[in-house]
Length: 308
Image (cartoon, rainbow, N blue to C red):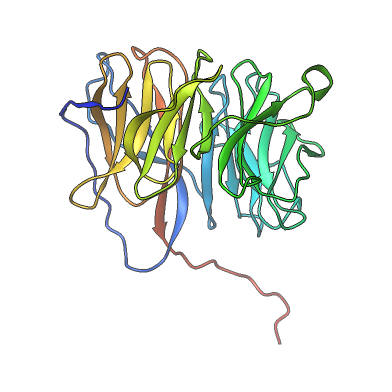
């Protein structure tokens, strides 16, 4: 597939008045319209604090959300319930920058990237907490780890060949060996396998970033979408959700149907950030979609005791 057919559909829209200046990031939720739910699609704030909350991902069962946040003073990995309640910090002082959390298919582990020695490396931690285990130690940058749908492989992108390419390594080195294998040949970042395990989707860097796919067993690399805003795409059973910039400077959340190759608008959003995720399941159910929204800076209220 190399082109998508545009399908113009009515979308819900909203407007938020903000002040000028820098912003912080919150995680917002939008419920997709279904035949049983034909009302306007209205995004709503879900995960927020006085700091930044970004890069959300739903757990495979949709009951929990993992995300990165600097609400503790530095970037760490957090988890919470699907309604945003009971946030718990999972990592602490792995590196100066800890980011890009991704669930294992069974929901028991979380992959992430951190930089304890300067370069970015891959780690895994139990989703209930514990000591993270380091997966890579190369003198290069390994970023954006994601499990294959069967849990056997871990995909990531690396600059170990002086160009960002997709690689994969065994999730169980004792069974499948510990040698990493290069997957792409023309560059690639941010891998995500299709739910049926047939294809690997990824981005090609550039302006704009384009979305590509290739068979997981190897084969031709084919462009799927010409433009995706930053790294904001999520693969569902029947299509791709993605963010794109509109002609008027706003941002659209859109859906590419992989059967019809039609693209439809899901919702208009404002001030997008980094991160897009969707609950699994058939499209006749109302899918929940999370994205990141930048908001104006607030001032933190501090209490100083025994001031003289």
